[in-house]
Length: 364
Image 1 (tube, rainbow, N blue to C red):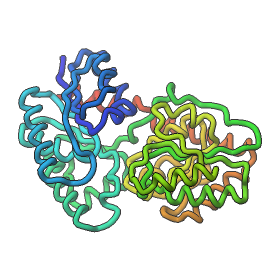
Image 2: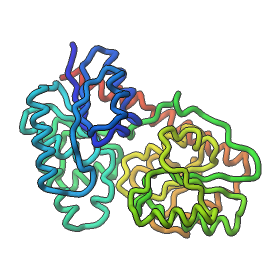
Image 3: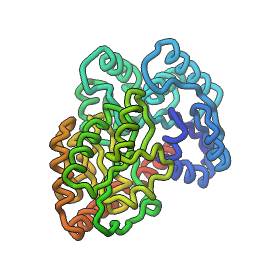
Image 4: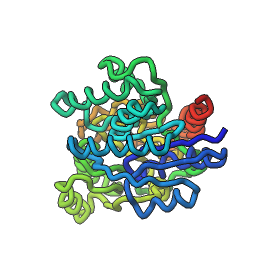
C-alpha cells in the first residue's frame, strides 16, 4: 500500500550522506516521500529523485525558546496539512520538537538518536533542559532507535524513554560505495581527521599529536577535512597549515578519495557520538582507525585488531597509539585494515538499517 513518509532533518547533507539509499528504496516501492529540511540549493538533488521538499527554517545550534517554539509550530502545521503515515527524524532538534509535534497531531514518529553531541558531557543547565525536553517528547513517541548501547542505557536510566526503543548499528555504510582499497605504498604514512573543527570533536588533541609525531617521524602527513565550526580555530588551523604540521583541505563532499590516499583515520571525539560514520567508511575501505574510547567508537573498533582506542582528551595517549601504528609493518597495517572491513561487512552494512526502516513503513 502506498504510504506518505515524512523525513525531518536539520540539513540536506545529513539525508544525502546517510539516508539517500533508504529514500531511493521508498520511492522505488511507490511511497510518497516528503523532506522537511532548511532551504538549500542542493535540495534539488532530492527533487530530481522524486521527493517533495518542505523548506523548514531551523537554528541548528543553541536553545532559543522563541525560535524553537516556532519550529514546533511549523512541524505541527506540516503534519496537520500532510497527514503522513509515518515520520522519521534525525538529529537533536527534529527528534525533540518533531516528537512534540507528532504527539500533538497523533502521528507515528520514529526518532533516531544519532548521538547527543556535547549535550550530556557535563551536568549543567543545558543538559537539564535537554533531559526535560527528551522526557516530554520521546516517552510518547511511536519508536526510538539508538545507535549504541551507552546512549540507550543513559536514556533509560534517566527515564527519557519507556519501552518504545530498539537498536540499530548506526547509519550503516554503503559497502559498494566504500569498497576495500589497497593501502598506499612507499615510505610516507598519511593520517586524516574528518569532522567539524571544534573542541568537542578533539581537534586540539589531534593538532598536538600531529605536532609531536612529526618531530619524531617527519615523513608522516596529517590531513584535516571539515568545516571550521568554531571561529577561534581559524587562525590556529591556518598557523598549523602554514607551518606544514597539517594539510587543511576543508569540507569534502566526497571523502572517499582522501581516505584512499591515507593509511589511518583518527577520531579524537570527546563523546556524544552515535556510531561514527567516519569510522565505518574508513574501516570499509580497509583503513585502520584510531579513536577515543567512547560510546560509539568502541562499538566499531576492536582494540589492537582493527585499530586502537585511547583515553578521550588525552593527547599523549593518542600520540602513543599513533606511534604503535607507525611502528607496524606494512603487512600488519594491511591485516588490521582487512579485519576492520570484515567487521563492517558483518555488523554495519547499510542495508540492515534500510530494512529496519522499511519494516516500520510496512507494519503501519
